[in-house]
Amino acid sequence: MESADMPKPDAARSAARATPAAPDLAGFAVGDAVMHPAHGVGRVTGQSSADVGGEKLELVHFAFGEGRLLLRVPRAKVVANGIRRLAGGELIAEALEVLTGTPRGAARGITWARRAAELQAKLNSGDPRKVAEVLRDLSRNVNNPERSFSERQIFEAALERLSVEIAAVENTTREAAVAKIAQRIPVAPTPIAVAA
Image (cartoon, rainbow, N blue to C red; front, side, top):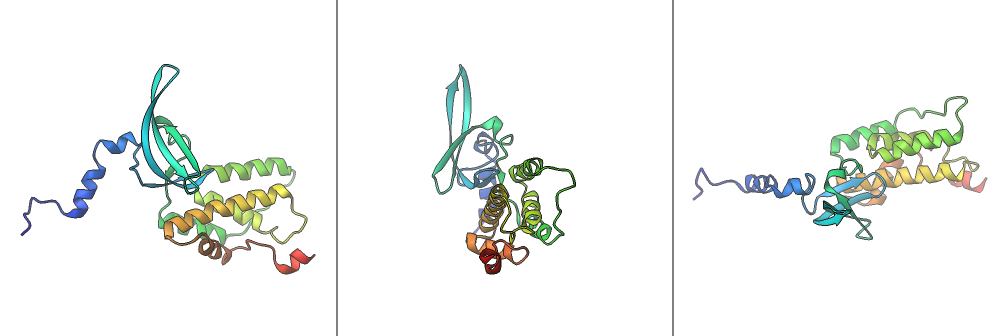
């Protein structure tokens, strides 16, 4: 028989997250999935402290790429480094909606170097909607065999970042996420374009 004062299991889990340990991890808990603008989806693995230049720093540990990359970030710098929780389903839906919009070409008189810097800034913002803008705007040249190497690199980086976040949020494979993106924009050259 349950007492009215006894917390429900969900309430107990919420109370456990609200313990003082959560702020020590910059608002995250060990095991939380996170997104880094440059390294993609990762997990919080723990915390430690270190003396650097006579100052004690509290570090939050993150693992990216199936544990191949380990980052230790000062707790006060986690947000400044762009590390955030995974996007919710609503934000992913907005990003997928951005893909269906009309691609924007470069404004007249803007060099590729300047445009590439603007696209890279959107890519590094970590915002899935801005990453989707990069994909949308570069997708119109996917079938152009003369597109530059740097354009292909930026496009592929944007595709990787958006697809891994969609896969993590929807608990699916990266391939399924790429297929979902491919329903809205071309993500690979057609066989005719490759043969040209």
